[in-house]
Amino acid sequence: MSQRALVTGAGGFIGSHLVSYLRHRGWWVRGVDLKRPEFGPSDADEFVVGDLRDPAVAATACEGVDEVYALAADMGGMGFISRDPATILHNNALININTIRAAQLAGVTRYFLASSACIYPEHIQTTPDASALRETDAFPADPQDSYGWEKLMAELLCRYYHEQYGMEVRVARYHNIYGPNGTYDGGREKAPAAMCRKVALASEDGSIEVWGDGSQTRSFCYVDDCVEGTYLLMRSDHREPLNIGSDRLVSVDELAHLVFAAAGRDGLGIEHVEGPQGVRGRNSDNTLLRKVLGWEPSVPLEKGLLETYQWISRELAARSVA
Ligand code: NAD
Image (cartoon, rainbow, N blue to C red; front, side):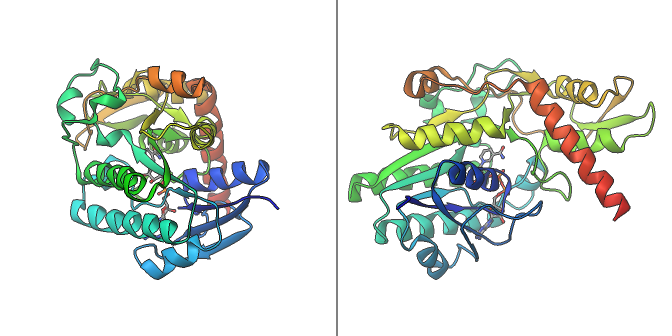
């Protein structure tokens, strides 16, 4: 009989890709989410529509599975996570407390938490060329916002469930994941998807708006690399948090130019406007990732952005004729 996995947040961006990845590897997969995937049917064998803030939903979702991938979260890009800090901490804490408890009571053997680069202290990310973040940089803790504080609490929950109950836990700190089938409008979208949308909709020789002065830096990891790294981490014996991200640092203006190139629209301009920017510079140090998994993300940003741009422009075109 095939092994059974639960993916929470299976209606979301990374969760829906992870469901497909696990199914291809022969796993029986149950998904749970507030909603079904926005862009096409789920590949899950079973899909529970439910709210993990309710412990009874978490219990039902965890019933009879061997492993849990906990990806559900109330989240979005900088605009979203800087707006409602109390709601984010409240919702995500309930989701994670309920899910790990239900998993432990159901006898789940392995538990994965999707944490975030947002747990790293703000004061070591104040310049565009700030040093890449190592896993050991997390403490003393000083995340920038409530989203990061909650992820840190959820990481600690994993550590203590291992200490107290012997549960096998795996924790990835994702760094800016992007790719097709992600939200690209409505206020929760992240920078790469927002830029692809703006470029696709820009008038001939027009310009796109970029929040801030455009010299803030990030690294961006393609979703196929993210789900592969997630699976490899789950299969490893590494119980401490691990970065999953690219270590190619680009400024937000450089990202915009890469999207222009992907779209074949190099004539577009950039207009810098006021907006939430997050930390000034953030990169992933992949030394530990390479050592632990013997692997690191490999999809070039140019290729990933091309796939993402083409998907978003197709979506927009389909929408305009609908
Ligand atoms: P997403 O918003 O597309 O997916 C999250 C899903 O969780 C959504 O479908 C949402 O409906 C669901 N959800 C929210 N509240 C819920 C609830 N109460 N009960 C059940 N489901 C609920 O986000 P994503 O980009 O796919 O992120 C997946 C995970 O990875 C999240 O935990 C996120 O914090 C983490 N992460 C993502 C990134 C990134 O760049 N995308 C970076 C760091 C960490």
